[in-house]
Image (cartoon, rainbow, N blue to C red):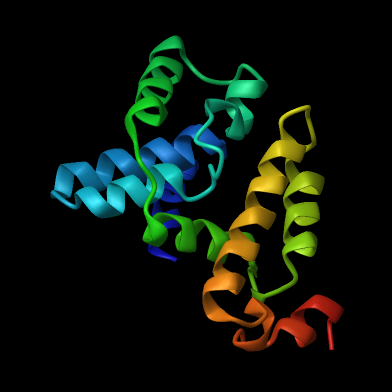
Length: 153
C-alpha cells in the first residue's frame, strides 16, 4: 500500500520502523501530499503514543527523530479515515487479509514484544470493534480471502 512506501529508504538506511514512518512522511511532504504524509506517520500507531514505534522503545532512533515524532503525536488528531487505514494495516499480511490476531502475532514475531504492545493491540481491537459497530456486522464478512489467508488454504 502507498502508506508503506517509506520502506524504500530501507535499502539505504536499513530496515527500521523509524525509517519506514519518517521516510514516507518526509517524501510525501516534499511532494506536497500532506494527507499521505500523515498516513505514513500514523498508520501503525493507534494509541498516538511514540511508544507504538519499536525503534523508540529499543532506543534505535536519534534524539532529533524522537523529538519530531513525539511533537507530531502530541499535535495530531485522528479522524475515521486515519483509523480505517490503521485497522486495514492491522488486518493485512503480504498475501492479503487475515484475522487481526494473526497479523499482530506476525509483527510480534518479527519485531519482538515489549510492555507497550498490549495497549497497542487493545487499540487495534477497539478500532475493529468501532468499525464493526458502524457497519453492523463483522469486518471479516466483507474482506476477501480472510479464511484462506488465515488458515493457508
